Image (cartoon, rainbow, N blue to C red; front, top):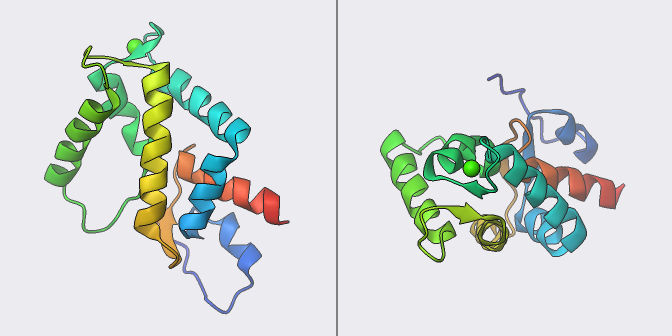
Length: 148
Ligand SMILES: [Ca+2]
């Protein structure tokens, strides 16, 4: 993946053409609070993740899609940390411990996760990699559309 150097003197609009964006917590919370946009995005993500189309997400389906789904890729994150994160996330999603995640569980948890991500980011702008069709990317696009 190539990181395009980001020159801080550039106008804000130029940030969004790159695969690396600058976001803060508000970027994410505003997206989550826009129910229609967020639910639409969540539904699309669910369909993408549900590879075998049985209407629920298995552990491996969640894990497979997880990279593109969220994700704040921090330089410091090791493979071990990621692996344990996947497990914790699955347990958290699977609220009724059925071993699978249904659409409702997915939607509820994604909302919580994105709000947690937002509060983790806080008010300080951070640089994040936007890959594939991640929710974070949607949040950035959402912000862009609403501010133009
Ligand atoms: Ca499935």
